[in-house]
Image 1 (cartoon, rainbow, N blue to C red):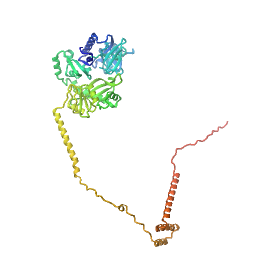
Image 2: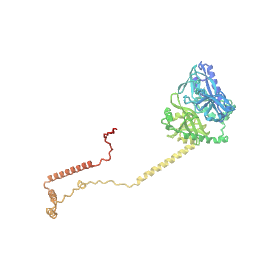
Image 3: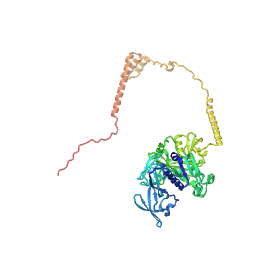
Image 4: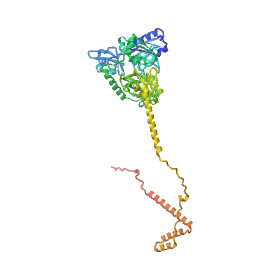
Amino acid sequence: MKTSPEARSRTLIIAQLNADRKAINAGIHAALAARGELGEKAIKVPVLDKITHTRHEFNKTESWEAGMVVKRGDRYQDVVAVDRNGSTVTVRDEEGKIALVSPKELITGDVQLFRRSEMEVRSGDLLKFTATDREQGQMANQRYTVESVSEEGNIRLKGENGRVTINPEKVRAQQNLDYGWAVTGYGAQGASSDYVIALEGTKDGRKALASRRAFYISASRVKEHVQIYTDKKADWVKAVKTPERDIKTAHDALAPETQRKQAKAIWAMGQPVNKTAIGRAWVRHQGMQDASLTAKIIPATRRFPEPALALPVYDNNGRSAGLAMVSLVASPEGRMTQGETRMVMTERARGAVLQRSQSGNTIVASDLAAALDAVRHHPKDGVVWQTGDEPPSAWLLKVSGGTKQDVSPGIVSTLTDEQNVQQLREQMLADQIRNEDAGRNRQPESLLPEIPQEEVIRLKPEDINPRKPEPLTPDADVIARVRGEENTGGQEMKAAAGVRSELEGADKASGEQSRASRVIADLANAERDMLRVAENTERGRMPEREEQTLTRTIQKER
């Protein structure tokens, strides 16, 4: 309470129990109102407090009371009466319709029970939604500052993503409301703040929650400074130093395999981020177009009405250990952003791989916001979100594809000397093999025979195009003897005379003209033959067309 309002807005208070959280929030509200730091006008608004039951208690009428509110799917109903003899519950919906419900037939995963209560709201209060409602655009654990309140029950809220006005009196879904100064360790998962104040007790119900894991959750939410308060320091330090047993009961021994199977089934339901419209919109709104995420988009279900971003989680042995499910919701501005985070993983889980390395470097982040920021600004580096108590091992980093890593605040992860020596040996062996391959490739070049230089040979034109021998000129006596032996017609005599005249060289110019005339005549005849053939060629099957004919009907007169 001694800090400034600006510092209080950057401070997160973490409590172990819900009772502690409510008491802290009520005390802060009363103190701020008494000091005049809140508005003078105060209104009372109805709120719903969720009842936490075991798996089978919802199926018994002993857990139901008149005046409760039940949520089945997306519908809110008021519990009017409980018939314990008949094992039925009478409910009334928001439209006033009455119905009978048998708790034995209800599916526990689709049923939530609430108790009614009221809370005072003033301007200056810090509020948060306790449940996500996609239709109302509200996201669980997102904090808002109250700007103003009205007598009609309207509350004007200002958050990181803008302003919104709610009215819990009229909208039942907006009654999932609470003060936002203090949260439980479960609600703090996936959140981060500049300053953290944690309550770590060791008495009564807090004793079972004082552990190394609880301390890690409180300490890893901070960016600058953390303060831890406890009722007995020695007992708390002893509880933090005591290692948790990995296997406590037979159920605990089987739990990791059950969680792995559940995570495997969920992973099979998903699609790559860039294969879905929601995934592409989220990547675009977050400025991660250049990133290569290893995540998948899980569609919405009845139990979880928001689609989720599934991130694979591994243990320090590099073995799959589950999934980190980050719900995707729409902000008041209509942009896709991150909602609440739930873990489906074993106790040995240590880190979620958001992006595999393409540069040889891997960045380790302490929270989801820092991991997403690293993906946004380093699209080629591997990004690991540390989810466990211990820093990621070399085997886990090997899954991300990077050996070097940038150290984020509060996390130190370095390779041991033995690993450095091993990497140096592997590098030297790779260089030796590379040199041997290069020498082997150069050796065949030296064994090739030397090719003598080409000799220049000069050829004369008459060697390339030798002169053709002159045609023999037949003797006149030979021609006369041939003519006498053959009794041919007048055409042959004319042809022989033409040949003789050509051979004797008489009137060469006129002979050339006659030959040209014959060639022209032959070409003309060939052209006429081609045209004649084209005209006589069958056109092929043409579309049949029925000619119109005039018809006349003659009707016989009677």
